[in-house]
Image 1 (tube, one colour):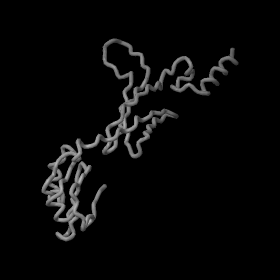
Image 2 (tube, helix red, strand yellow; image 1 turned 60 degrees about the horizontal axis):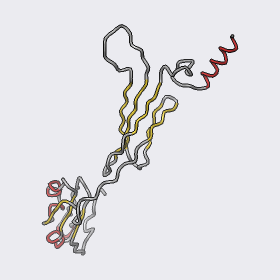
Image 3 (cartoon, helix red, strand yellow; image 1 turned 180 degrees about the vertical axis):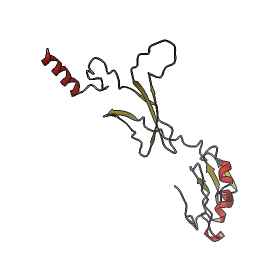
Image 4 (cartoon, one colour; image 1 turned 30 degrees about the vertical axis):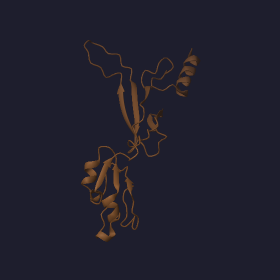
Length: 182
């Protein structure tokens, strides 16, 4: 929700108002007759707000007009937010893609590789294996569990004959060509 119209609850004396908005927006009308809630609601109703947001409500137009503001839902604690689904990691044709079943979630990722090393000596064997970690976030939701995947792009092993980091039909063709030359 991003707004509540003027006189949205006109004529309704509401005993309890529960808001789950963590960053309240002003709900003031242009005149005292066009306020979102009735004067009776502002003076008698209890406004319940998410934990840790009471000061924001007391400083925001319209909400600050409630005489009684408490944190919680009036029936216990504020409901636990839903958790984002754990995203999946896919790698194809040199492109990483992340997907999450939670609609509107944004994936937060981190990529490290095994070749980032410190040390001493005259030689370092490079493997170019990347470790990808990703989790999903969405306002009002808990962050998802972390998904991880290792992707080997270089030195693709014995099957990666042409050394492009991908085992594919090009490698098979290289092996076939080699056999034909023998």
